[in-house]
Amino acid sequence: MKKLISEFIGTLWLVLGGCGSAVLAAAYPELGIGFAGVALAFGLTVVTMAYAIGHISGCHLNPAVSIGLWIGGRFDKKEVIPYIIAQVLGGIAGAGILYLIATGKPGFEVGGFAANGYAEHSPGGYSMVAALVTEVVMTFMFLIIILGATHSKAPCGLAGLAIGLGLTLIHLISIPVTNTSVNPARSTSQALFAGGWAIDQLWLFWIAPIVGAVLAGIVYKAISPEKE
Image 1 (cartoon, rainbow, N blue to C red):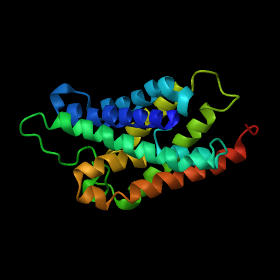
Image 2 (image 1 turned 60 degrees about the vertical axis):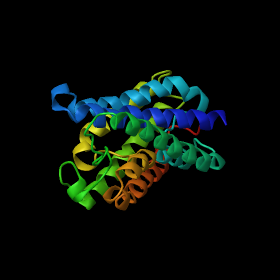
Image 3 (image 1 turned 135 degrees about the horizontal axis):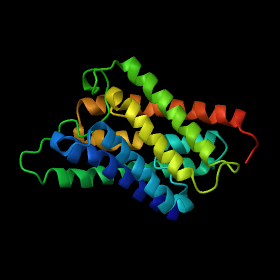
């Protein structure tokens, strides 16, 4: 239960910090954070939680990460579903808090609410195929970073920084394409409040990250210098 509560809190913080920066700050050009600021915000949520709860739950904050770690031989199969439930609920709670804050401004419109999308709902107008490839590849690389940075032979104590900076880089690359998911819990939480098209397109932001994570687990297990 301590692990699940930690995952709930951590995913709440990821959604509130990352999506909050997009909804509350990036929406106003005069504040100047832009895509780069949102990318950094997502990375900072992971860095801060890695050191806050990493020693309790492993700080997955992402169903794709839990699945990828299981495939890679780093996580117990029986904990995967409870972790995913805690992460999705935490993400929804974070989005709910963000909604309460955002609607406190007169004239606020929910709009996309930092949801993920493709085609006309992609920030740069990218196709479904482009979005699918982006989410698979970005999640693949994210899991490679996680599996490598947390390996017993990796430099001690630096995993949180590597993973957080990796997520920042992923956002810098893919925000224009899909608004960056690589995390089904994050996508679900925003889609529930955006509704409509965001719900219709949510399938891609579950399937693609999980496929990327599974592939990374298989590949890293094959190239890992030794079994943990």
